[in-house]
Length: 216
Image 1 (tube, rainbow, N blue to C red):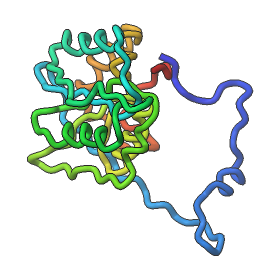
Image 2 (cartoon, rainbow, N blue to C red):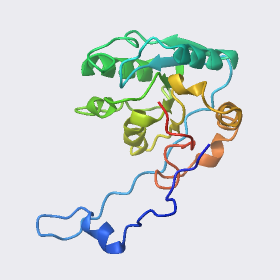
Image 3 (tube, helix red, strand yellow):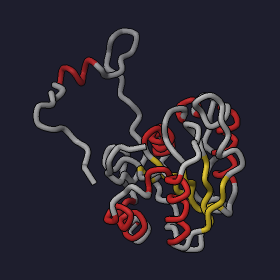
């Protein structure tokens, strides 16, 4: 796993650069942004839990890697359901925007699902956020883990701004390529030590981020 960050030779932004990019009101005064709420951590996953696979971004090609990713979760004892429409295609997207929103909505609203696994990244996640409202979490319907990276980061970011943590980790088409230590961290440490993420904000921990190579 390679941690993200600047490398030798990178140019670092200056204070004036940061201020110039800051939001301003019509008179040019700096606007104080609303702070991101502390993230609530969904219940830990345990073997036997039912997980839902969706494709909110790019279209899924027939792939041995996808099947391998599914098998890794199943071998760990989890039950995996493929959401209706997960393999739809509409150009380079996994179905039209409304169809992909339906996948996400269905996975979020079904109390049987304890986590949402994204099949792949690509492009299209931000399109789902147009005129989108996240279903409210409650005691009867607690928040659930959203797991993915690449284009899925837009959904993780949006959800985190509401105060719900997720996992910036492998999608199903990349999971089999992760080194053993990354898989061990995902399945071994992630759910066994969730309490350490309580109260962290997006700037402190990017939606429960797991650093790894940026592959799709």
